Image (cartoon, rainbow, N blue to C red; front, top):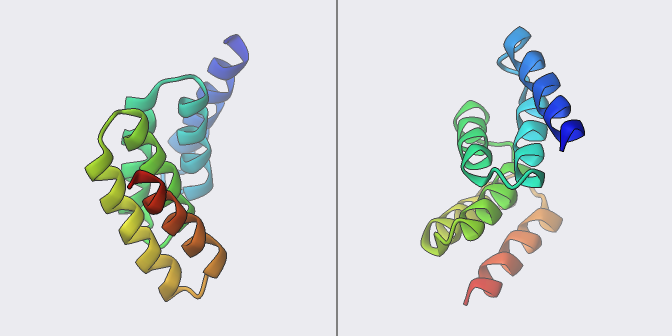
Length: 106
């Protein structure tokens, strides 16, 4: 647990010095998920989605967080938006992963 907290603290410090660092924000969301802090993870991924709406990896993780929070309708919306973004970028692999996540919700 202490290691997770120190990584979270380090990522927060990185974001304080560069709030536009999309990778640090994404990594912070992943760390929150690892620590079981799903509400914090959701908030971070939502911030990232606003900050960089084309950061396609965000959609998969945000959808997973919504699933963990029991919000399947929100998860579906996020995945569907992610499919659109991935397709617009020609990212077939991520598009397929997001489509599979949608299919798994059914």
